[in-house]
Amino acid sequence: MNIAVCVKQIPDQSVPGRLDPGTHNLVRDGKLILDDSDSYGVEMALQLVDRAGGGEVTLISMAPNSELSGLRTALAMGASKAVLVSDPSLAGSDALTTAKVLAAAIRRNPFDLVMAATESTDGYTGTVPVQIAELLDIPSVSFAKKVEIENGVLKVQRQTESGYDEVECPLPALVSVTAGVVEPRYPSFKGIMAAKSKPVDVLDVAGLGTGPLTSGQEIVSVRDAEERASGTVVIDEGEGYQQVVEFLESLKII
Amino acid sequence: MSLSKIWVFVEPSESGVSSTSLELISAASSIAPLVEAFGYGVGPEVSQTLGDHGATKLIAATGLDGVLAGTAVASVMAKRIAGDAPDAIFFAATPEGRDAAARLSAKLDLPVCTNVVNLLQDGADLVSEHAVFGGAVIVSAKFTSAGPGIYVIRAKSFTAEPKGGAAAAFEEVNVGDIGSAGKAKIVQSHVEARSGPKLDEAPVVVSGGRGLGQQESYQMIEELAKLLNGAPGASRAIVDAGWVPYSYQVGQTGKTVKPSVYIACGISGATQHMVGMKGAKNIIAINKDADAPIFTIADLGIVGDVHKILPKLIEAIKSKG
Ligand SMILES: Cc1cc2nc3c(=O)[nH]c(=O)nc-3n(C[C@H](O)[C@H](O)[C@H](O)COP(=O)(O)OP(=O)(O)OC[C@H]3O[C@@H](n4cnc5c(N)ncnc54)[C@H](O)[C@@H]3O)c2cc1C
Image (cartoon, rainbow over the protein chains, first blue to last red):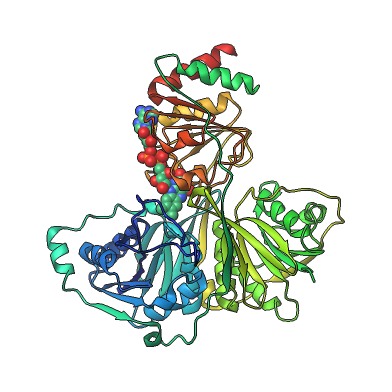
């Protein structure tokens, strides 16, 4: 069982994000970390390979620079190797361009399954995984909250607007997982040490052979949204509920 | 020049067609004279409602045979686009809508922009507005490449407005064999039963978060919601923890709600949560941390313990009868 897991390295989300005033791209300098949303896919892939009794988890990533720290985290969790497409021309890529790059990188190694997060924490377009599936001409199951493989058949519980669907699908296929799917492990000390020597294949766009890539959209302006003014804040000393009652009364809710 | 034709992906609901689909039809019909709806799981019974909101035609995909709906409808759209291309294509930001937009975009090499909260016309161009950083910043974008642009639009960005149009013309298209994309099949669907008003239509929403501490405490949220004729909702943290189903989730990846009153209990106010409830007319927050971000948008904030405040609040409302 060989699984390609798409992971994104993103700026630390505890630091507020900002847009470059010139290019309007999200500023991504400084140290990049593994997107938390991706740790679920990595964990799921490791478990599936384990249960299958062998195979490799290969990380697939794209970045405008050759930053590796986020990938090292996922390698420390147990992934075998990584492919990083790193090229300054990829700064500000749109979703389809990202999908083209990742699909080309995935093709470099044999795979039975592709995993991704439903959406990234910092960009959250939420279309890249299924775009990758279309480019690779394989079936996809998005919004997976439970994933199993039985006799070469992928079995997924997929979240829907009103509940969930049980979906089955032959391999190769792509699954995008939600955050609840598994509990990601913490890298062990041994894992962290081992990750330092695991292979990372770094290439640029020319090395991928996708042909020219152009983003089909441009940002025309950026402005602050109207702020919602905050109202009264009171500290509960036993009677705080009364304030809520009065507020609801004033709105004629009760 | 202006836009002449827009395609809109429409999804079914218990009442026929989803309210978000009607919002998109209304938005499209305010921009272009021809609005064609592409749906699944709907038939001629929704033609009148769609027409009333401005759709001129309904093309319903049939014979899905378990194929995921977004994938199926994208293939119908892709086959039709040659010779009949629209100027823009709208999808709602639902699981199905996102699948369809993604498949179509990659199939036809068309750019897609997501998280759209508003659309403005600029001559022959459409400018889309996107809320980023939890709705604090609005980014406006435009497509630069040829061909129809694909827009994935957040629910409640537009108002569904009946304007008295004639019933939409109805056409059925059999999905047929769609190759490897069609190999993922639904073997069983589970609908999670909910009572009371729908989360995204309820006038009052009471949501609970991790601050409830344990699953059992969610009962207080349900009880309060019921007393106020509202719907119970949740942050993603407790959906991930398995306390409540995903259909309860409010936010970036869940439902967008715009009730008259939103009561957030034990919810910190992460940007991804706020983007789904910031549009509420009135916001009440109960959180024991005075610095919780949720207080920056609350009309009334109570700093305190949900376990102490909610039981008293429930009692007080009950005693008012
Ligand atoms: C790509 C992506 C998409 C996401 N989509 C969504 C989404 O759709 N919806 C969503 O909600 N989140 C979403 N999230 C998750 C979001 O970032 C937060 O993690 C989540 O909203 C936190 O939920 P919470 O407020 O319940 O938990 P926490 O952030 O842990 O907050 C719990 C709060 O409870 C308070 N508290 C604790 N005990 C008590 C008590 N006894 N009484 C009162 N208050 C108490 C604490 O002070 C704290 O503020 C998304 C994240 C990502 C990365």
